Length: 232
Image 1 (cartoon, rainbow, N blue to C red):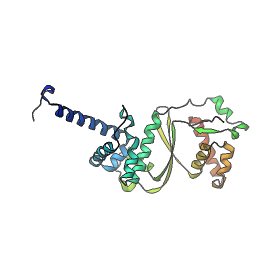
Image 2 (cartoon, one colour; image 1 turned 180 degrees about the horizontal axis):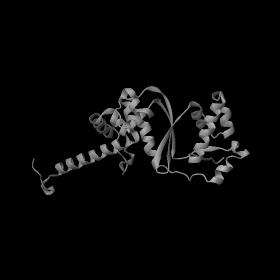
Image 3 (cartoon, rainbow, N blue to C red; image 1 turned 90 degrees about the horizontal axis):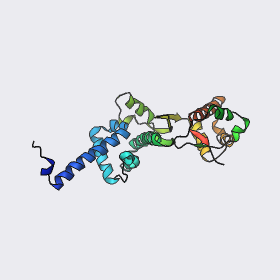
């Protein structure tokens, strides 16, 4: 094939080269953010999906970092509900990484949480945390992808999965939530005190183990700085 100097290309040819380069950058950006979705779909199908997506939802930001904002919506509109849930999860891992993270509580602050007045404290979720309520089991497929195992869309089992996605230090993490832990977080999001939140989810706390699970989770969230005192 013949190689032409840039000065020998006409405007249409230069624009075509630019578009091919930009298209490749957009694909690479989406592949970075949705690596498991890409693995499930296959590279060719994912590439075609990306082209159709950016045609319907063109980027309106100066940076490609926001390109995936509507990817899960697009997949759902195309009838790919399982892949859409997987995309929601992977996009949350990306967005919490770039979110503002408050300082981790000091030893003195953690000791204060153990006081009698603690149960009347109002807490809210930190900006670097997202609570996901999905209709497919995505965490197992995500882990299989990270182990470089074969993953297929059939592995995205249709069943509820609740996931806490968060950032600690310089990495994104996630925690699969039980129904009681999810309900507890949702109660806190309603600006209830810890005591009132526990009262609200009491029907779910049928055993001592259920209570221990919620309070152990609460302690872990506080230690990681995932919850912060709410202005009440």
